[in-house]
Length: 350
Image: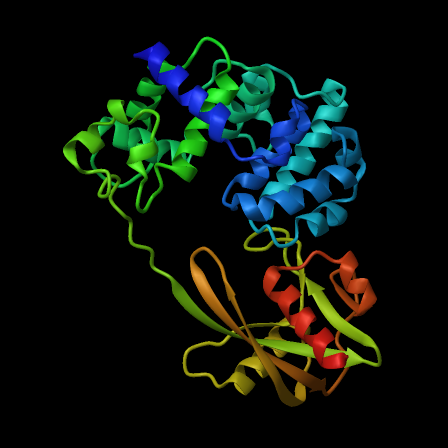
């Protein structure tokens, strides 16, 4: 089974794989960048970010020398910003301790910021053809169907999945085998409506034989929270007031407009006044509603009500609070919701 399973899968991959930019390189650094970007992000979204990133930071040395704010700005819109912080921190370690080269030792790789079992296995197998297995959401779903494993797709299944993968891992082209498994999950063995008729390993699939491929794995219901928030646009001539988020927590170290969540029982105006008092220590004199912006995150939907605000006194200015012009917004990494606000402000000003 080992030889036929892996050869069937790799042959299918050779004929059907998508033409993606990171598949045209064996540079371990670029493979590393692509694998980190692809975590929690769709392939179509990553392509443009990856191509721009490797132009701006073509080597580990270039990335290590870049200021973190520059790195975060290039990551803006990809979300999960700790990925960018970790890849930057790891690049500095690699330059200082490993001459800017990604080592082949899995123990060293695992010790670097942002490297877990999946990223270690994927990068080393693809870049160096090391015999390491990988388990991501696509691989987990594929193997759960192959083995007809019951339950929700989570880490509880990984021991059995790992055992199976070690049995079918080929002696060569391990990186292609791992990519083929992920590609199979993305293109054929999809979460909804799997296309079993074109699957290269369908004859090994127990779920298919049992007619259970549509119900394995079980779907975990997502609870999406709806959040209402108010945003203050504070202007002084041609300049806008922005602030930096804390270095820990959600959207850490990104820049945004003042504001926050509307508490239960509050009106938008009351929430706006409270947030400005809490964040900046200033009183709201008057406000005018400009527009609303909707944005979706993994676990919640947020509606941002944006107001043009006049304050009783000028807000503080320090390293985490700044007045910036429209053209200078490009220098500050911001959450996607804030970026949408800037786009609307730009349209309203034209």
